[in-house]
Every structure is written in structure tokens, then in C-alpha cells.
Length: 537
Ligand code: NGO
Image 1 (cartoon, helix red, strand yellow):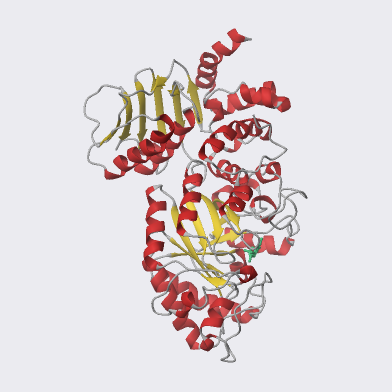
Image 2 (image 1 turned 120 degrees about the horizontal axis):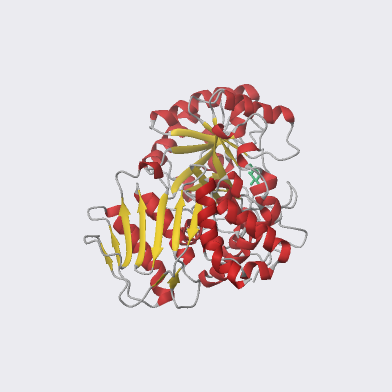
């Protein structure tokens, strides 16, 4: 058995190379068979490369690996501020746990391979924006990418190759070559139902980054609170932000705080998508400015959890001056491509009004140089050319509603998949879960993982799928611990669905690899749910 194990890296190399199959695929299938539901023993048998989540496109383990020591430095391609920053972030992640100095240098001059080298290679275009190659041998590690984002993703693989909590700090030897399946791999946080501080969101950003998530969608406004300062409409934040579900004090971010958060995410190559939900889900705005109401009377602030009762006044010109003010300021705060305009559950807006509203508002997004993202109800209007819709239906969603999304996809609209009964992180895991809701049913870890985004929605082929996003709505979530309990481990599965090739998605293998993440999550202080369907070590 031991001999077999020792020969496995070599066999994997030969087989993967000869048959031109992904080594990860071959090895996953192998571990699924040998480990199967064997549980904890199966987890212990996993090699360092087999533990990487999301599963890389290909791995070829081999050789003794490199042990970090007091002399280890991290060197980045000369002249690239991006590469140097990735090197710094890697060293910052490792210093506390290893106690090593890990000096960073912005020059990779010299051909020596000692220590860690982060290389940008202008000829490595095949890696695209986020792909990378990581080679580790006894002298050190060389990480190569075409773009700094690829170095950052590869640095997360490096982090996962290091033991989570105890030395010797040996990086497993071998090569990982990796590119993502989808370009959009998101998580959403609703900071409107309950307010979260920038520090809390940064912590979440750090946790998401380790699993190669590249998009953070922030649901900034809803009936219960408006969380971002808008200079031209100050009452939105000062009044509309001072409430939340349950009657707490709420809160809002200044534009400076928001910029800081966006920059923090940006350094981790996570694009922030701000959402201003219109025309429904707008009670906080309607309460702040009376003229936005058709009857000119501002309603009281709202702290309950009902949906679908509020609407901006579609026929009034004031509405568009308001939306334009808000979108102008939010666009100016957004280096990213998208402005999310919500559009869900506008039950108090007539169909005709909804269409008229979207016809006016979508061009405003384009005028600010941004692309429209909206919940899939936008297909009830005319999605603008280039608009992206976010599908949040579930198994019981009507065929007609699904068909409308398929029709839009056929007409060129791209789709982000967030099926509620799969990756809504606010759904309870099971009947024992205390926080969360269950309107779309319970979502155990297995259910959250076992679906293929490329073949999920009838009539929406893989080419139309931009990627996946796991939303966390916070009607019941009031603090960081509850957030982590619901998000982890399911958001890790969403990250893998977005990154790993379809052939690598296999529950029996994944549950072992996920279990192997337990000690790493423990070391990072992530308060994850020890789901019963995963054989945690
Ligand atoms: C729905 C609704 C939200 C809720 C959420 C709760 C969408 C897109 N609109 O999802 O307002 O908070 O469910 O799970």
C-alpha cells in the first residue's frame, strides 16, 4: 500500500501526460474510488495537492518539496507594482503562522530558484487573466502568470499547499497548472437588512479570497436600510440608513469607507458590484424623500421582513432625477464593470410601469460607462444590450419564468446563476440550523455543491453563463459569527463550481477535500458549520 502511494505521483504524471487528461480529474476519480465514503480515513490519505479547493485544472505532484526557513524571501517580477503587492499579501498571510521574516523584494533578478518567485510572463497569454502555473521543488517555488490576478490566485494555491497550523513549513513538490472555468465567481452580502461594518466585510473578503472568489456583490439598499452615503441625497444614509430589521440602529458607510473597502477587495482581485435595488425594495428611500412617493407622503421606516410592498413612483420625473443622482455617485465609486440595479420582487409596480422604468434606468447605467446587472425579473422588461441577469429561481420556479431567462440568453443576455435552493447561503442547512430561513427549502452542503452551472438551466448553455454567485441575505443574520456559520462551508462549494472544470466536480471526492479544509479554517478562525455530510478530521 505504502509502495503504491509512493508511486502514485509518478503514475499520475505518466497517465495524465499520456492520455492528455487532467491530472486532477484522474486523481479525483481515484480518490473517490479508494476513499469513497470512507470518511476520516479517506481525508487523512489525501495528498497536499488533492486537498486544494477549488480543484485545479491539473496537478502533477512530485519531488521532495520546499521547506520555508529563516532565509526564505519572496521576490516579484521587477517593475510590477501588482506582482509586488501579491508578494506582500502572501508574506503577510504567512508571517503570523510561520513566525518567519519572509522579506519581500520587487525584483526577481538572478536565476536562482531559492525562495519564492512570482513571475509575470508576457508570453503566457494562455493563462488569461487569472490562470497560473506553480512549480515547487527543493530549491523553492516559482509562480508564473500572465496577469497579477493570476499571481494572486496562484498565491492562494501556494497557501493551501502549506500545512495549516504547524511546521515544518514544507510546500509539497510538483506542478499545478490552473485556469478558471468561469470568469464570474461571486459572493453577495446583504448589508441592508442588517448593517455590517467595513471591517466585518473585509474579513469576509479575506476568507473568500482564499477560495479564488473574484466578485463581491454588495446589496446596499433595501426597504429596511440605505447603507451608502449619497452626497446629493444626504437623507438616504442619515435617515434611511438609521434602521434595520428588528429595529436596531442600522448604520451606513461614508463614501470614503466604501472606497477603502473597494480598494481592499481590489488588491485581492475581487471586483465589487454595488447594488441599488429599484424600483421595489425602496422603502428606506421612500421614507427619506417624500417626493419619490406617488402620493407625496413619506412612509415610516420599516424594520420587518416582508417584501414586495414598496415602489418608486414610475410616472414622476423626480424618480429619474433621483436614480440618476444615485447612479452617478455610485458609478464614480466603482472601478468595476457592473452596476446592479436589483429589479426583483417589484410586486407593487405594474408590469407596464416596470418596463417603462427599466427602459429609462438601464441607459443611465450605460451613460456612466457601466454594464447593467439585475435580478432575472429584468427579463420581464427588455434587458439592454450587454446586460447580465442573475437567476435566483429554484426547482419550483415556473417553466415560463425559466423560459424567459432562456429566451434572454438566446438573445445574448449573459446569466449569473444563484439558484436559491442551491446557493442561497441564508437557507438553513437542515432543521437543526438556528439562523437562516427555509423558504426555498433546506440546503445541505451536498445540495449546494451537486449541480453543474453549465447545464443547470434548460436553454441556458454554458456559453451564456457568466458564472455563479452565492448570496447571503441577512434578515436573520446579525453578526460575523452567524455570517460565517451560514457561508462556510457552502460558499467554498460555490467557489469550486465557479472555478473547477465540470469533470472535476464529484461529491464523493469533494467531501473529503472539503473536510481537509477544516484545520485550515480552524487556523484562520473561520467559524464554519461542521456539516454532518462532511467527514471533518
Ligand atoms: C429573495 C428576495 C430578497 C430576500 C431573499 C431571502 C431576491 C433576489 N429577492 O431574493 O429580498 O432577502 O430572497 O432569501
